[in-house]
Length: 254
Image (cartoon, rainbow, N blue to C red):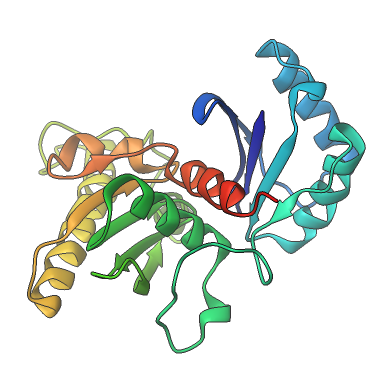
């Protein structure tokens, strides 16, 4: 059984693969202030509540954009599963060419997204990953990561509105029926939700215009659920990053 771990700035996501199929996915909040013992307790609870045991895991693959948490999870995997995890980074075979100015700058999450996208949909892809930040990836006609755009995520936008003003409240992130809000709550939700959807559509259109060709469009990330109903032309892949980690893990089997 393969365990994939996505260590992000907001959440740590876990995926369980049995016979190449994702059978379980769960997550816990990402906090650098948490101790190894706290994450161990969270993992034990998540495994037991899903009727899983640690001995079932025979391989772990990790993607991390939070170095302090990687330093917790790598030894934790050795302790709980008695094996050394594969960590996405230098020395690990991904099968993904990277055509950017500085390939070493490309985040592990973006690489996993790209590998997952190519595995599921082939080439010429536009991937919108909505997490702490909104990332818009281009995978070219040869299946190479060929650039991206990065913008503030939904929660960052909402927090900026709430904390940067005196009278605006926190909102629930529900898309109102009309983009023209009639009250403060609907007006803010419209700006955040419809604004994000329009941002995604705008970047997709701009990418296609600059490239002179259509792209297969994929939507993923923890915040994608808030806008997926507004993006009918996108393939929604909740666990795209985990699919990428699964593919990478298989490519590094001895």
